[in-house]
Image (cartoon, rainbow, N blue to C red; front, side, top):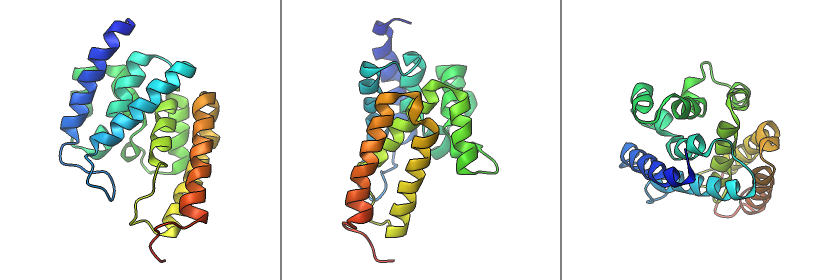
Length: 188
């Protein structure tokens, strides 16, 4: 696949994800959930400019689709028909609901074992999620989310130096604003 084929692939995945997440909102926001997947894909595109994210024709659509198996009624078979096995496998590796029984360690190990593409998408996802904390989250939830982010950095940060650094910086900012500072937090 050439670079010229990436834009139509992006559009195809963007439209699919937007339709699949139709009606969903970002946590504690009126923004459509598709905003989140666009931000994850944007993070990935900028990361690719610094260092390879792996096969861009897998990583980019999978970044846009990373939550469709977990958060919508989209079937894996449908995703395979539209985007192929590699993209679908990458999306499946990022879907917490497919890890049974679930543990954060098993989830991160599965991502690390799957592919570079899966690892960089998870890094991009967490960087995006750390931009703000939902106002409905308690201090304990914000603190645990920060600790979970540290696990992601530990398991996956080495896969892509630029994204590892971005995640570390995002964690420091998040900790200052939403854990140590306590801005806008609900009481325990």
